[in-house]
Picture (cartoon, rainbow, N blue to C red):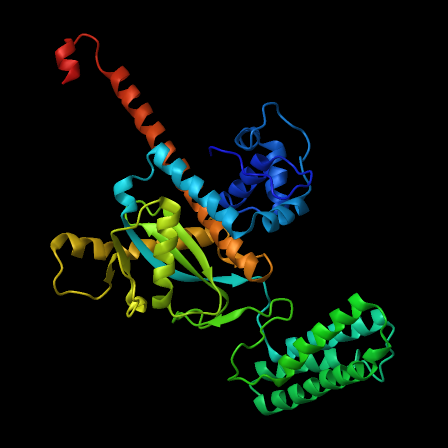
Length: 405
């Protein structure tokens, strides 16, 4: 992929090319941190890709090193990795300068690695975490409800399944009361905790649980997971899945080929049209040229982008036949997103926080480009083999001019 990734920080660290190659391979083949290292040990092609000269029989790094490296690289570093895949696509012929001038932009939801949020689950998890912190800090609670609360949480699910919603709401009120009692009891006895770090953790958890207990069904910035409070509830109008819990991701691909030239997470569930100028700016930064045409769906109406011709689906007046043809190509980005979710790892983000969403989204784009380059090289190889076989199969008794014809 060209240059080596600069070594972050000033500490002793592993080879940057190894880590960059592992991140590429991980998202190209949809592997976890542990799986990509296990595959690396048994696959000589993986080892050659990451810069090894001799075959290695043991893992070069621990899987946790990849997590630390992602934190060191940051969002700017993974965008640099995406730029290198675009340059490799140019060198291989998988993407041309002309194709980079015409792009399609769309958004999708990258779901978070959380359980489906229900009030009973959230109240029970909040109570359990508070009891665990109190036990660690040596706080003696008046009552921890370790026996009653789990039974109530299971009972709420049974009432909901039987469509007995009045009983379900009554159980939820009781469960919420248990969590509130534990919260207030810890708040009264918090002054006895002398360890500063543990006291800070308890205060942060108290603030988070207080926010959980005060939220209503129509509150903004609701909490859907205690370990991921930044998760958004996004409705994309799908018949099979009404709501998705995660982060919105903006994707820009070439109209011909579906090569990813821009990818960025958008926390806070912004309006699609408001994300278009930022997406076009990222494409210009990564490719070195501003796209002349961007094709989008109707969710981008009122985008306010300048410097690039934007075609919105449904536009019929004033379009040349070529523009109409390009507008019909807009839906080609949908299967590319589907491949990123099934073949790559875009369907479920396993990294923590908004920074984890940003890194994960861009790395999924890197993996998609790697698969595109490999598919292009395989097609070239098959075409070469086919031409050789066809040349060998020609009869030798024909004149040279006839064989050339």
